[in-house]
Length: 88
Ligand SMILES: [Zn+2]
Image (cartoon, rainbow, N blue to C red; front, side, top):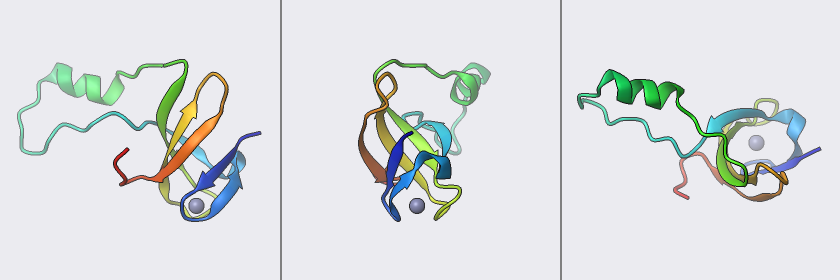
């Protein structure tokens, strides 16, 4: 079982969290023309990397905050966690 250090609550069991997807995807700027292909890529296109990856997790059974987790998808080692609005 994984233990994730929530920046707000401290170390908690993975059971309290829900995976939220890739934290490296940038939303297109507001008030800017975006092609259908660019929008489709933003909404649907995701990589499935093996190795170190930055992910969103939701502390759904705790403080209900979104956080970023720097995790290795192959070994499940967690290197660091951040608040969702922190630049990494
Ligand atoms: Zn929390």
